Amino acid sequence: YLKEQKISPIVILGYELGGTMAVHYLAKTLKHELRGLVLVSLISEPGNSPLDANINLAAIQIPVLDVFGLNDQESVLKALIPRRATPNSRHRVLEMVGADHSYWGHEEELIKRIRGWLSLLVASSVSANP
Image 1 (cartoon, rainbow, N blue to C red):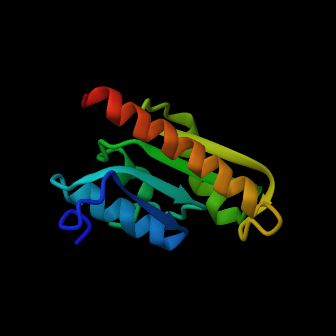
Image 2 (cartoon, rainbow, N blue to C red; image 1 turned 120 degrees about the vertical axis):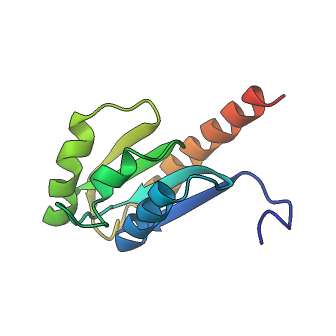
Image 3 (cartoon, rainbow, N blue to C red; image 1 turned 45 degrees about the vertical axis):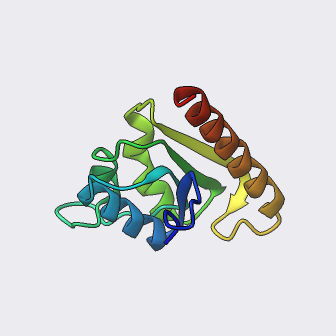
């Protein structure tokens, strides 16, 4: 639909399980029109699960912004450990000091940080495709 409406670039934002589902979809779908992925408080089902976001992220070839609050849920913080230990030029991890899982009181900062990343993404897309 977005492509038909000539809306570009297309970026998906997924919060918690929505992010996990987006990562799963993108890892299995090699041909798509997406330019970026924003993940907020991503959770993961570790092990042999098809929803192991840490494994699925390795297959994604588009830029990813991975946001979490320093006071986030334990499951989010635990799932983040392997992603922080494996540097990837397309994957940026962004921690928000003082934010919890709901980002209550940090909504403006969250929006500002995501907008900043999106601005850089669009600028790099324009310079790569003059």
